[in-house]
Length: 219
Image (cartoon, rainbow, N blue to C red; front, side, top):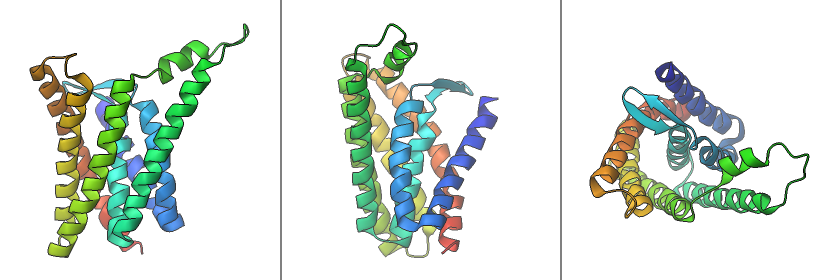
Protein backbone atom coordinates (compact mmCIF):
# COMPACT_ATOMS: atom_id res chain seq x y z
CA UNK A 1 0.00 0.00 0.00
CA UNK A 2 2.79 2.43 0.89
CA UNK A 3 4.48 1.83 -2.48
CA UNK A 4 1.31 2.70 -4.40
CA UNK A 5 0.65 5.73 -2.22
CA UNK A 6 4.28 6.76 -2.65
CA UNK A 7 3.97 6.88 -6.45
CA UNK A 8 0.64 8.70 -6.16
CA UNK A 9 2.33 11.19 -3.83
CA UNK A 10 5.13 11.74 -6.36
CA UNK A 11 2.70 12.23 -9.26
CA UNK A 12 0.42 14.60 -7.30
CA UNK A 13 3.29 16.65 -5.86
CA UNK A 14 5.19 17.07 -9.14
CA UNK A 15 1.95 17.77 -11.02
CA UNK A 16 1.18 20.58 -8.57
CA UNK A 17 4.64 22.08 -9.21
CA UNK A 18 4.01 22.09 -12.98
CA UNK A 19 0.47 23.42 -12.52
CA UNK A 20 1.40 26.29 -10.23
CA UNK A 21 4.11 27.38 -12.68
CA UNK A 22 1.69 27.18 -15.60
CA UNK A 23 -0.90 29.29 -13.77
CA UNK A 24 1.35 31.82 -12.00
CA UNK A 25 4.75 31.58 -13.74
CA UNK A 26 7.85 32.08 -11.60
CA UNK A 27 5.84 33.74 -8.83
CA UNK A 28 3.94 30.48 -8.46
CA UNK A 29 7.21 28.60 -8.03
CA UNK A 30 8.26 31.06 -5.32
CA UNK A 31 5.05 30.24 -3.50
CA UNK A 32 5.57 26.51 -4.03
CA UNK A 33 9.10 26.61 -2.61
CA UNK A 34 7.78 28.28 0.54
CA UNK A 35 4.87 25.85 0.84
CA UNK A 36 7.05 22.80 0.22
CA UNK A 37 9.64 23.86 2.78
CA UNK A 38 7.01 24.29 5.51
CA UNK A 39 5.07 21.13 4.66
CA UNK A 40 8.27 19.09 4.38
CA UNK A 41 9.22 20.11 7.90
CA UNK A 42 5.86 18.74 9.05
CA UNK A 43 5.57 15.57 6.99
CA UNK A 44 9.18 14.60 7.67
CA UNK A 45 8.02 13.66 11.17
CA UNK A 46 6.08 10.65 9.81
CA UNK A 47 8.17 7.56 9.11
CA UNK A 48 7.01 4.83 6.72
CA UNK A 49 8.36 1.54 5.36
CA UNK A 50 8.93 1.20 1.62
CA UNK A 51 10.13 -2.25 0.59
CA UNK A 52 12.67 -2.97 3.34
CA UNK A 53 13.61 0.69 3.77
CA UNK A 54 12.40 3.15 6.40
CA UNK A 55 12.02 6.69 5.16
CA UNK A 56 10.08 9.88 5.87
CA UNK A 57 7.25 11.45 3.89
CA UNK A 58 9.22 14.68 3.59
CA UNK A 59 11.46 13.28 0.86
CA UNK A 60 9.06 13.96 -2.01
CA UNK A 61 8.38 17.55 -0.93
CA UNK A 62 12.10 18.24 -0.51
CA UNK A 63 12.68 16.70 -3.96
CA UNK A 64 10.02 18.99 -5.42
CA UNK A 65 12.18 21.99 -4.51
CA UNK A 66 14.85 20.69 -6.90
CA UNK A 67 12.23 20.33 -9.64
CA UNK A 68 11.02 23.88 -8.96
CA UNK A 69 14.50 25.41 -9.16
CA UNK A 70 15.31 23.36 -12.29
CA UNK A 71 12.16 24.72 -13.96
CA UNK A 72 13.22 28.23 -12.96
CA UNK A 73 16.72 27.71 -14.35
CA UNK A 74 15.29 26.26 -17.56
CA UNK A 75 12.49 28.74 -18.24
CA UNK A 76 13.54 31.89 -16.39
CA UNK A 77 17.03 32.51 -15.00
CA UNK A 78 19.66 31.36 -12.57
CA UNK A 79 19.02 34.47 -10.48
CA UNK A 80 15.31 33.66 -10.23
CA UNK A 81 16.15 30.13 -9.05
CA UNK A 82 18.49 31.48 -6.37
CA UNK A 83 15.84 33.93 -5.21
CA UNK A 84 13.48 30.99 -4.81
CA UNK A 85 15.96 29.22 -2.53
CA UNK A 86 16.40 32.34 -0.40
CA UNK A 87 12.61 32.60 -0.04
CA UNK A 88 12.31 28.94 0.94
CA UNK A 89 15.01 29.34 3.60
CA UNK A 90 13.23 32.42 4.95
CA UNK A 91 9.94 30.48 5.03
CA UNK A 92 11.58 27.56 6.83
CA UNK A 93 13.19 29.78 9.44
CA UNK A 94 9.92 31.68 9.94
CA UNK A 95 8.06 28.40 10.44
CA UNK A 96 10.59 27.26 13.05
CA UNK A 97 10.54 30.57 14.95
CA UNK A 98 6.74 30.83 15.06
CA UNK A 99 6.17 27.19 16.06
CA UNK A 100 8.79 27.36 18.81
CA UNK A 101 7.28 30.61 20.10
CA UNK A 102 3.85 28.96 20.06
CA UNK A 103 5.11 26.15 22.29
CA UNK A 104 6.27 28.67 24.92
CA UNK A 105 2.71 29.81 25.66
CA UNK A 106 1.12 28.22 28.73
CA UNK A 107 -1.97 26.33 27.52
CA UNK A 108 -5.42 26.82 28.98
CA UNK A 109 -6.91 24.12 31.15
CA UNK A 110 -9.41 23.63 28.33
CA UNK A 111 -6.69 23.11 25.72
CA UNK A 112 -6.65 19.72 23.95
CA UNK A 113 -3.94 20.15 21.31
CA UNK A 114 -0.84 21.41 23.13
CA UNK A 115 0.67 17.97 23.72
CA UNK A 116 0.15 17.03 20.09
CA UNK A 117 1.75 20.30 18.99
CA UNK A 118 4.72 19.60 21.27
CA UNK A 119 5.18 16.21 19.64
CA UNK A 120 4.94 17.69 16.16
CA UNK A 121 6.91 20.90 16.61
CA UNK A 122 9.59 19.95 19.13
CA UNK A 123 12.97 20.06 17.38
CA UNK A 124 16.62 19.32 17.91
CA UNK A 125 18.59 22.52 17.31
CA UNK A 126 21.50 20.49 15.94
CA UNK A 127 19.31 18.51 13.55
CA UNK A 128 17.33 21.48 12.25
CA UNK A 129 20.50 23.56 11.81
CA UNK A 130 22.12 20.76 9.81
CA UNK A 131 18.94 20.35 7.76
CA UNK A 132 18.59 24.04 6.87
CA UNK A 133 22.30 24.40 6.10
CA UNK A 134 22.40 21.40 3.77
CA UNK A 135 19.06 22.35 2.19
CA UNK A 136 20.53 25.73 1.28
CA UNK A 137 23.89 24.39 0.08
CA UNK A 138 22.44 21.50 -1.94
CA UNK A 139 19.84 23.65 -3.69
CA UNK A 140 22.32 26.40 -4.53
CA UNK A 141 24.79 23.79 -5.79
CA UNK A 142 22.03 22.19 -7.87
CA UNK A 143 21.30 25.54 -9.51
CA UNK A 144 24.99 26.11 -10.25
CA UNK A 145 25.57 22.63 -11.70
CA UNK A 146 22.31 22.68 -13.69
CA UNK A 147 23.17 25.98 -15.36
CA UNK A 148 26.74 24.91 -16.12
CA UNK A 149 25.44 21.73 -17.76
CA UNK A 150 22.80 23.76 -19.61
CA UNK A 151 25.57 25.85 -21.18
CA UNK A 152 27.63 22.80 -22.12
CA UNK A 153 24.79 20.44 -23.10
CA UNK A 154 21.90 22.67 -24.23
CA UNK A 155 20.04 19.80 -25.91
CA UNK A 156 20.26 17.29 -23.06
CA UNK A 157 17.58 18.35 -20.63
CA UNK A 158 17.28 14.89 -19.03
CA UNK A 159 21.03 14.78 -18.43
CA UNK A 160 21.41 18.09 -16.63
CA UNK A 161 18.23 17.53 -14.63
CA UNK A 162 19.19 14.07 -13.37
CA UNK A 163 22.91 14.67 -12.86
CA UNK A 164 22.51 17.90 -10.89
CA UNK A 165 19.61 16.63 -8.75
CA UNK A 166 21.05 13.19 -7.97
CA UNK A 167 24.53 14.53 -7.24
CA UNK A 168 23.22 17.24 -4.91
CA UNK A 169 20.87 14.81 -3.17
CA UNK A 170 23.80 12.49 -2.44
CA UNK A 171 25.90 15.34 -1.07
CA UNK A 172 23.00 16.60 1.05
CA UNK A 173 22.20 13.21 2.56
CA UNK A 174 25.72 12.22 3.55
CA UNK A 175 26.71 15.61 4.94
CA UNK A 176 23.39 16.12 6.74
CA UNK A 177 23.52 12.74 8.46
CA UNK A 178 27.14 13.33 9.46
CA UNK A 179 26.46 16.79 10.87
CA UNK A 180 23.25 15.73 12.62
CA UNK A 181 24.24 12.34 14.03
CA UNK A 182 28.03 12.20 14.42
CA UNK A 183 28.70 11.22 18.02
CA UNK A 184 25.15 9.90 18.40
CA UNK A 185 25.36 7.00 15.95
CA UNK A 186 28.42 5.09 14.75
CA UNK A 187 29.94 5.93 11.36
CA UNK A 188 28.63 2.69 9.75
CA UNK A 189 25.09 3.46 10.96
CA UNK A 190 25.29 7.03 9.65
CA UNK A 191 26.50 5.77 6.27
CA UNK A 192 23.70 3.18 6.21
CA UNK A 193 21.01 5.79 6.94
CA UNK A 194 22.42 8.19 4.33
CA UNK A 195 22.72 5.46 1.70
CA UNK A 196 19.15 4.24 2.22
CA UNK A 197 17.78 7.78 1.95
CA UNK A 198 19.92 8.46 -1.12
CA UNK A 199 18.62 5.37 -2.94
CA UNK A 200 15.03 6.44 -2.33
CA UNK A 201 15.72 10.03 -3.40
CA UNK A 202 17.47 8.88 -6.59
CA UNK A 203 14.27 7.06 -7.56
CA UNK A 204 12.24 10.19 -6.78
CA UNK A 205 14.69 12.36 -8.76
CA UNK A 206 14.37 10.13 -11.82
CA UNK A 207 10.60 10.50 -11.60
CA UNK A 208 10.73 14.30 -11.82
CA UNK A 209 12.31 14.38 -15.32
CA UNK A 210 9.06 13.86 -17.28
CA UNK A 211 7.48 16.70 -15.32
CA UNK A 212 10.34 19.03 -16.28
CA UNK A 213 9.74 18.18 -19.95
CA UNK A 214 6.01 18.78 -19.54
CA UNK A 215 6.65 22.15 -17.87
CA UNK A 216 8.99 23.20 -20.68
CA UNK A 217 6.37 22.37 -23.31
CA UNK A 218 3.72 24.39 -21.45
CA UNK A 219 5.29 27.75 -22.22
